[in-house]
Amino acid sequence: MKLTRTLLLACIALSALNVAAQTKDTIITIEKKVLVKIPDSVSPWQHKNSIGFDLSEIAFVNWSAGGTSSVSGLVRGNFTRIYSKGNFKWGNELIVRYGVNKQDGIELRKTDDAFQFSSTAGYRRDSTSNWYHSAKFNFNTQFTNGYNYPNTEVAISKPFAPAYTFLGVGAEYSNKEKKINLYISPLTLKNTLVLDQRLADQGAFGVSKAIFDDVTGERLKKGKQAKTELGFLFTSHFKKEIFKNITFENRLTLYSDYINKFGNIDVDWQTQLDLVVNQYVRANIGFNLIYDDDIKAKEEKDGEQITVGPKIQLKQVLGIGLVYNF
Image (cartoon, rainbow, N blue to C red):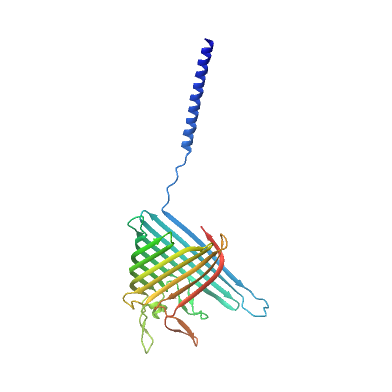
């Protein structure tokens, strides 16, 4: 009888312990569930910022072979904002550059100056297509006056003189895997702004120049500060790491006006190689080729600036400096 009671009490005790253990596990499980953090929803915005500073310097002291000491600096920035949700995409990019050079016995001179903003909105029919029905807006100008050195008395360009805007509709091909972006627009409005009356009176950058009296030289009609064209626009952008720590980037813009000399193409071609040293140090090699029939070259002759015909503009860049991405 005692043995039976003992076994019964042992069974009751074990059952109680089992229930308590299950209750404890349940409490722990509940506590764990309560402490689980619900992840935030993924933002449709992507952003990338890059700021760089290139510096080159050479100095001579009693150097028998001769030479001129100089120092050059270039500040550049690239900022992108991309909104992507469903089949809609809106991309924005801002590029800024400003560079100067100082040599012994020569005043400070500008070597680079650019403010470029681009915005493209597109919609595709399904998520598998790389083609978008798109609208594109571009704006380009500069920060400070430009001169035909060594003449620094008369500026040949100024902020918003010129400034260019492009606004059009077309089709965009965007392939993330191949790192390529193409845009084709059969209808693009190009506006050229020259918001400096002296330059506008000269007919700089293709605007209608002023009318002067042949005898007195008096201005009879002001030069126009804006010029509007309707034409065809093609742009392409390719950026890819072609070898380890070597990135190749190519940008090309082609534009032709339907009304004025159709087939005469304005070209803006930029190519650059970035060589990564480490996270913060990079070297870059690049060039920029521009041809625009409306931009007339200026030459210095007998102390006067003479306007000649359009010429191919070419800029080559080689630098090493610091880059900070955030």
